[in-house]
Length: 245
Ligand code: 6PG
Image (cartoon, rainbow, N blue to C red):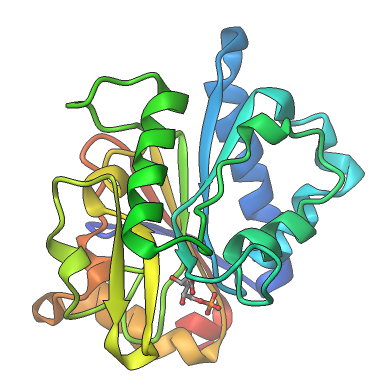
């Protein structure tokens, strides 16, 4: 079932499995369209646990030929400040789930969580500019931006009450998140909102209240509510548990 609102399109699925297959189809359609005519494809992957099923689905044989993987650039919408082989690494978890796909290692652009945070954010900004071949004043336009929704309304590593929310000059930034007692790396709203397609993946009863607040409580001013593509599509892939069914 699909509902369209000012907050974008909401597609409701029976469970995480069905949601992930539908998201894999959406991923392939966006990639095929962006890659038409031999162009490069730019996708930012989400961290957290919800997208892992999608990544595993994409790595099945059925999806190998549906995406021009060799022309696909993979970035991340955020990262924890840990090395790539750390169990909390968003890069590490996605790379493991996507293993076997014919993606060029040159097109895998991970945030260097092991480096000093601000240095890593600057490095990532430079890497984005180089890969997108854009001028210093330009903002990269991802074909697809995958995001999750935290129970406090954060998305990427844009947490309530943090300085990263107001960063409109950098493409990527580092932020100290008091409640996590740790730094995070994240793409900023100007990049997220410049995407052609922004997809939230939200699953499970735990997300019911926050999803309702994001959709209904204008005064909440939650980070996820500030995701409004300026010239792109916003789609929520949610399961029935989120909708309270
Ligand atoms: C991260 C994420 C974060 C995540 C939400 C939802 O690094 O943690 O990028 O924004 O998407 O916290 O996480 P779950 O999917 O695990 O519920």
